[in-house]
Amino acid sequence: ESSNVSPKDISALGLSGQMHGSVFLDREGEVIRPAILWCDQRTQAQCDKIYKIFGYKNFIKLSYNRALPGFTAPKILWLREKEPENYSKVAWILLPKDYIRYRLSGKYATEVSDAAGTILMDIPKRNWSDKILEGLKISRNFLPDVYESIKVTSKVSASASSLTGLAQGTPIVGGASDNAAGAVGSGIIREGLISDSIGTSGVVFAYSKNPLYDSQGRVHSFCHAVPGRWHLTGVTLSAAGSLKWYYESFGPSKNIVDDYPDIKGYELLNKQAEKVVPGSDGLIFLPYL
Image 1: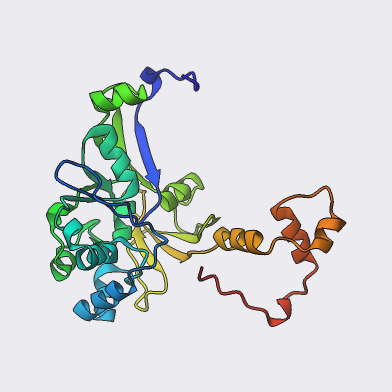
Image 2 (image 1 turned 120 degrees about the vertical axis):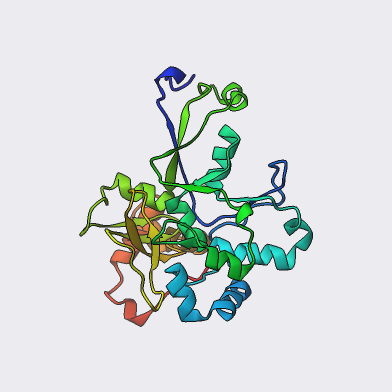
């Protein structure tokens, strides 16, 4: 109502959201426990176990990625090891945006760009990897079907229509992970283009016509939201999140506040940084927060 947009004028819905999170559902589609998010670092032991099962180099060759605590696969292993009662209830494992899809449509589905961040995919084939699932003893039945980002996955249900005002039957397309959606919006849809986005995390995103991987696992290799295309990604988990931590923990110096009475917030940190010599006298900040 506040948008003054008629539901009849909405041709389709596309979903986007944070990657790597795990939403565990039971047979009734109810959430079993709070989701474990991308920034959660509790699963290093499970990452080590993945390497023990497959071998470090072989796992990178299989998944096109390293096993990192933020990814979804080690979260599933963590739940199985640390919360076996909850794991015994699992019927579906969804990514955050795909839980919204389920609530809108009643359909369990995902798409390639977000599913790639689970490290359970065969990246060149753009579908779940039987070898990885078998090695980790994760049931394929837990995982939804994988669609290309532009394909219709489901439609708005009658119950969701009554709750949201959206027209029943409105198509819901696959959508994309936050990074892939942002890259499409930035025009990163052909070779030679790279984007850099700074939010809580920092992401450098490079388009690729073919599936590529780094044998040392220094970058992520995922499916792009552009059908039949891929991308390489370099990530730091604490980008603007580090800046927020510094601001809330230390804030700008009193001298800077006094010198710039008309400036507020983070801009004061910029003024303070302008007075620091290049190289910061050798000071190094490690963003592992």
